[in-house]
Image (cartoon, rainbow, N blue to C red):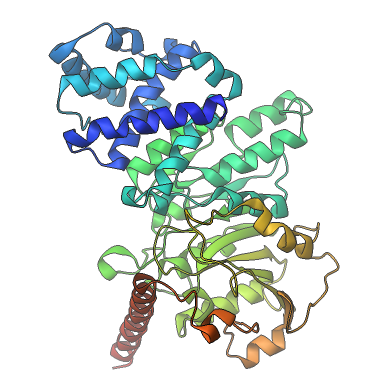
Length: 474
């Protein structure tokens, strides 16, 4: 175990201390974000950016009830009277800690960590490891903000982000895609040293941007980006409202939008969407392909219903295939997200220079059929994506020479005409599912129930859209 993973484990073990105080996993990580920010500022000698008298050394010097009172005062001060970046991290910050002894335990434990080794290996990696640990705990509910790192790395490898490109994530979560893209570019440019001073400045302050709806996730995102040396404009806001219309167009969009329907059952309040829908993934999909610059490319995680939903779903898919070259769909295995029963895919497409006929054929890679359900027992690794990456090829726009592996292979091609005959339904399978035939490895009851609920919700959404259409006609 390296120093970073050892520190992550020690930090995570501290969450057991907080159970008696009624602290949830996500509250704990948020609390750690406040404390780690102060400590890391001290370790990196950047605490001069903090108001004098409100730094780690000032918190550490206090004891008992005085320390807890000062901590509450410190959070208020940093959230209202400091630099814009620090204010964003501490916006509306409140401690969940109720007893001085718990705060003292956290402060002393954090202070005792091996910070020399942590700095050598990278404080950003330490914090990201903590976020990953949090997401792996189903009780934390944080999986909704966290895309598995092997999947992110696969998408980054295929999309090949380049220095100078504007890169967007409209559902940024804790920043996994933006940070992985930054890491990829830094590897290609000797940690940016091969770039001019102006190009380096662009990468640090302008190249990466996006939006996140949930404030707790947003503060984790800002902390994560700051520790990786990125200060792009990632706003707190709703991409499916007018906020999203203000996001600049991008050369590359990488994202995993939230699953489900819009809260309250209403439709997104974007007036630039051609197709109104309460399905958040279909709404995000419209934002993404409309938000690409000509020849820009995207890789986006979507649940199965995006592939087959009728009504507005069918129209949105047709519009996507007209405006973009939807060249590849990766059917992902089950169990890689915390939500039981959710089946997902990655759509790879590039924006055309015309408004019609850009998709000529779609290649499908089935990484789901006759694959295990991943989770703690069988962890997902980058090796699981190697064959797909080989089939995909080196061209990020899907233009590499490819081979259809036939009915017994995992990689197949379907023409636009064939898809049109299917009613633009992209939920295409061809491999025989051996687990269903044998009765072994059937999904868990909660997975079956979750899939039933998802399909019922889709049916309800379609009925609502039909009723709305009929009312308009009347």
